[in-house]
Amino acid sequence: MRFAAAFVYHGEMATDSRFVPFAYGFRPFFLLAGLYAVIAIAGWVWIFATGRVPSAALPPFLWHGHEMLFGFIGAAIAGFLLTAVPSWTGTRGFAGAPLVALTILWLAGRVAFAAAGALPPLWLAVCELSFLPLLAFLIGRTLLRTRNRNFPMLIIIAVLWAIDAWFLYAIANGELALASRALRVGIDLVVLLITVIGGRIVPNFTASALRQRGIEATIRSRPPVERVTIGSMVLMVLIDLVAPWHWAAWVVAGIAAIAQAVRMSGWRSLRTLSDPIVWVLHAAYAWLPIGLALKAVNLAGGAAWAAHWQHALTIGAAATMILAVTTRASLGHTGRPLVVARSIAVAYLLLLLAALVRVFGPAVMPDYLVTIEAAALLWIAAFGIYVVVYTPILTRPRVDQRPG
Image 1 (cartoon, rainbow, N blue to C red):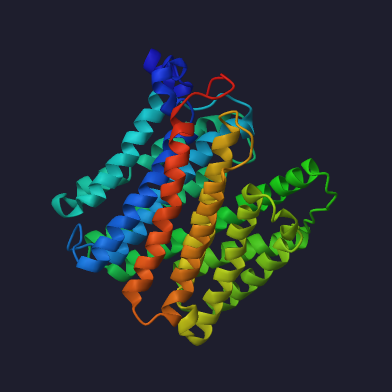
Image 2 (image 1 turned 135 degrees about the vertical axis):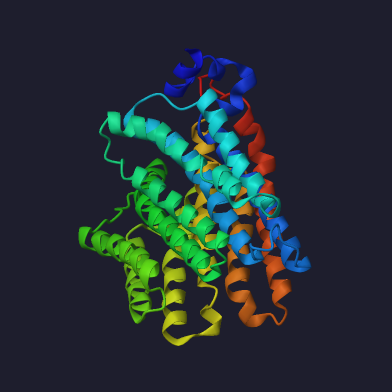
């Protein structure tokens, strides 16, 4: 009965100081996201340099893409939703036994992909595909019971799960192009999620920060721009699903880039430059119009300098937004002031520099491996700083002695 009760909330584990790392949803997954960001990229550089792969059926670039999408980004999404859903619904948070179980399933997927060559495809699929259904179950009961407007998040999780299954099916059948398309659509879905969630939190957090500094600034939100922005991003997902090389792909990407830039123009980004915890949100979101514009240029004319647009969306937008949200939410949900340490501001800059090097470096640096290694070292430094600074925050009790 106690374990069953834990799946509703947390049982006795969350109130025991020994289980602080599982006292709230953001704690284990924000820490795992940071740790895996370091481990997976270090592993990727080693694989890229040596040519050794976890499985002969899994080319290095597909392993890298999958683990960054479903490992690193998957952990961050889980931490965000497990923390946001209680706030959205006014209910108790997720902790204790269900959080431990969810963490184990995420780890099982990472271990399975590291040992993919030694596992039958069925076992690889079981280990990898168990995580998202439990996440959906945990947050779904709360969202549906409270009839919360954010219940479409369950659709996002379901589609991500289907993309993961699609990827595993393609790998098992040796259809590498199909597996690559699955990852492309998965990235599109993450970018759509950033568009929707980022479109809420960036202007809201900006307005709050400016008010606290006594600055009167109107944050503009224009409904027609909002509709075009989100609509074009949804259309991009659908086009990449069925015809990623069709001329419509670059047209929609170009429209989306313009819409994103116009949307962001009303957010008073330049007013935030003195506050790292706010400007990093704007810096992350700015990579959306940049990445989409690069995609449009590359698909339309084959410009080599725009060929790495996917990394503009993944490192620039997704990873930087993850670092921005995890550093902010971890402070707020542990009772700390929303002021990041100087070292974290440095981490923000290092990650943004990693994006610049990875996206534009190949066009100016003659050695592609050097570009990969330079971007990887900047990435590892950024998330290494995050892990060092935030491990105590994520594994120790709240400073205000409240539960969670």
